[in-house]
Image (cartoon, rainbow, N blue to C red; front, side, top):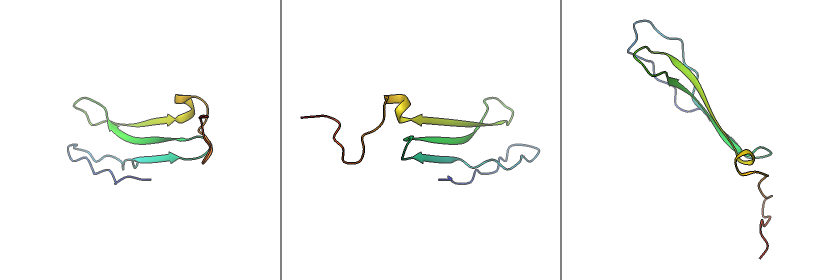
Length: 76
C-alpha cells in the first residue's frame, strides 16, 4: 500500500528531487509480518532526507510459525 504522496519541502532554496513514496507492506503467508518504508529528515538545520525501513517478521520475533487456519495451538 502506497501512502499519501510526500509534500514538497518548501524550506529549501534549491528544489529537491522527488521523494520516494512511503510504503506499508503486509505479508500474510509463508513469512508473516509487515514492513514500513518511509523518507525521514535527518536531524539538524540542513534538509537531508534518508530512507528508513522498519521490518517485522513474526517467526523471527516469536519463533516458529503461526498455526494453520482453524488449527488449534493448544490441547485442552
